[in-house]
Image: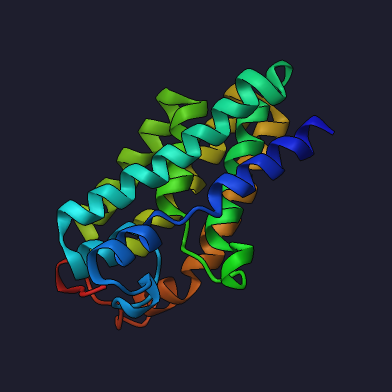
Length: 199
């Protein structure tokens, strides 16, 4: 039951789309009217600039941290890291599939990165840095996005145990699903590189 409570709490936090608030404040319209319509940092940076994108990133990290804090210190303190991962998974699901937006949300990159770094600072940071390196070397955002949670699966199983490993694998699967078309475009050499994007 505690696991479900953490998942639900994370989902509710994740449903708060910072990009929607920023877009309304800056343009008077929803984020759906900007670029790709994706309520994420990359789209907001491409359309409104780095400063507004940084605000979206801060909000997405903040809502993830709130979800984890609620579970770790109030709703299910006995679960420890596992509770944090359930909360993080819930936050990703809420961000990607918010009920109030007819389940059409973002891709969950910032939320996923925040979740794994908060539950496992060392290995989460290593995974994120490896994903960032992949983006810098290749220029492809989807590649880095998918690589981050996939890399984290290894230490999640090896260092933290079976249940954290399974939850990390679910996070990776969600990321692959959200970036499958981007990965297909990379394979067919039709994906634009980061410097060429206007998202």
